[in-house]
Length: 357
Image (cartoon, rainbow, N blue to C red):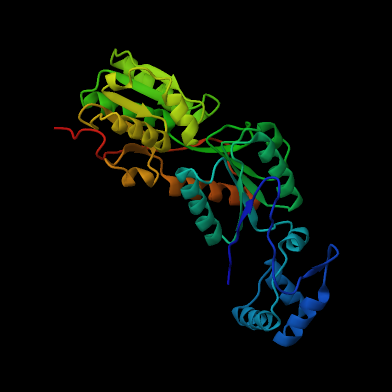
């Protein structure tokens, strides 16, 4: 039976996968006594057992059943690092995410884990906390563990991936011309957000954008701004210094004067939008009667808010599965075209904006 392990690497004390049971390797080499014991118990040749353990050739269903039964009897679990040395494919991939407590990235990690499992791969999950130094250290650790590939989500150390010599797929940020990028259509998502507020009668509109170092928030802002220009409407734009740290978001909110004077606010993600909503409600502002508000992501918190949050949906499951698919195709030797993959975003209408009449 295939098992998937999600491994959290915490800085600076890193915890790695530990496989229980009898090890197949010994001081960097293959311990043939384990394979020999399994072969004897199963009545199968050592070569066939080796092919089964390392997934390197044909093994009949009957032989597979006998080998697995013998494995269960001796309590053997294969060592992933030894298999990587032996087969050149560890069947492990890593996912770099900037913050596991961000609902969007926790949902993305779940989607990546599920699809990796389906494809026969183990997932290493690295929580960088948007720390460039941590991400760089994780890359070195993952290389030493011979991971087969990396999904880099919103990386801040692009240079580390330039000559890494293992397949990489990037989410949101462009790393280099040789790395595939998967993202939502953030530009069109921004346009959709403006059109919705405008069609609902909003004319005094504020856009709260995320840090400019992140490509996704820049594209959302550009789409929103371009749509406003198309209507000849002047909008206000305020940039926040963080995208998921609530205390910092609240601090940034304090710099906005006259928040209550707007009738429409588009916020760059759902966490920040929830924080803005909290501030408005504390000041007895009626949502959506006085101010209509929108987020971006469609993370699960949007439905839990009261009123529930209108937002732009990023198809998290589709993004995760596509990133894994593209990575594994490269790992397994396919020449995959190096081009951007952009996935459509859509409006999710809830209670923080008015229903169209």
